[in-house]
Image (cartoon, rainbow, N blue to C red; front, side, top):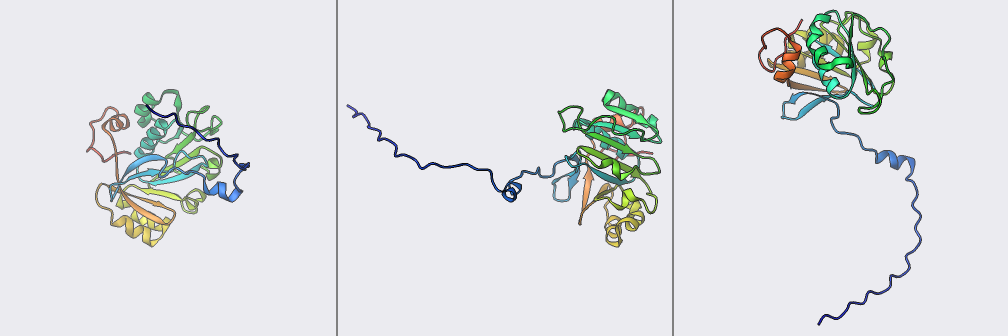
Length: 240
């Protein structure tokens, strides 16, 4: 027969006051997503590489290459919940993206009044606002000042003394043929890195580091980006 267990009374616990952490400590405890952003491709060690967008603090991105990358980036921003405005010299090339995006994509030949809505976090309100521009003249960097705003300029050769390009923290170079322009913008080391790119790889320069990346492109994305044309070699985008 089991003997009933006697549970002793708990001794009175000392009173404890829970108080907010000091400001510095609470900053230290803030959680920041690792490699948060839009997926770009795969690094040399097999790790996923992302571009910082959309982000709570907003920001600008520069791309040296063909306008097709702007459409690819727009597709991935749309998938992340953003509303995208395309300021483009080739509006016809956006037809496939427009069919998939519906009212979340606006295509025009200029920046106009952007953003067209108050940017918010994904899944809240209208969502982030993104501007993708392939015009010769880059947009104003001031447009990216504010939360959940992303401004991207894609071009083969940015104008000299461009305030937009001078202030960039992230630059993507789509091919080693742009090594000379890369060197002009980012210095000799960046030019050398770009010249050494293997075929099919792109360069990502951010802050004080450079990465060689294999761009990931799905068959579905390729079909939307090149409507009415035969698919190009898988994983390697073409464009105008």
